[in-house]
Image (cartoon, rainbow, N blue to C red):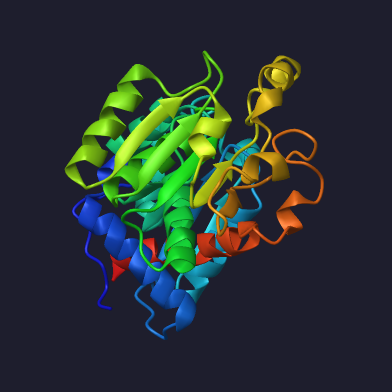
Length: 309
């Protein structure tokens, strides 16, 4: 498959990608995994990994993906930059743009990401913000394609918090004709604006979006069951309350029994055992969680290839 061309300069949200681009990136990621290429479109290019939050998968997968494409990375920790505190966001964006060819930013506030992109003259990639996690969704859709052989018509049930992962996943599923269902406790679901946006994208691309409270209703007959932590980074003070609220939303063998017989289980990691999943569940026969984690590398390499190829 030829390199994917993107209409967008920055990837801040899954909504920045057209449905055709999402499909092409996911297919390209699958192809890269099957047959790693020798093209080096990032030869002589440098990527800044500007991180406010800790990371395992995001940092390692980006560093290896950039190296596979011939480029190199420089990691910038919160203490080194102090973006928005020690140094203005606009200044960081303009300085880094003089040094590097791309900024991969992992942050707390999505507004800071938007401001950084506004002032940067090089591409900015959202490596996680409080609003979205588009790189994770590209890996998720790559995993679904691997498991199902195609994306349209698949039913994916997300059980848990209507967080950044759920939002990006909803947009991504809607873009490729997946039937997206999400079950969240009252007050913890996606916003009404999110729901309308996802429904509109789904309607235009042959999918659907369903928002419910009962996890069994969401999972009923689903081909893919997906969950995430109940308290994300930055919500540690809410963890005790959330454990109480989400107790009926654990994905376990009893809940999976409501899904299709050949359903697979996904989780973006890290997992909190004894909360959203029981101990050992990620090693079960239905889990494709570690394939999903590996696919972060291939999906991000496809994205970088599209930007620089």
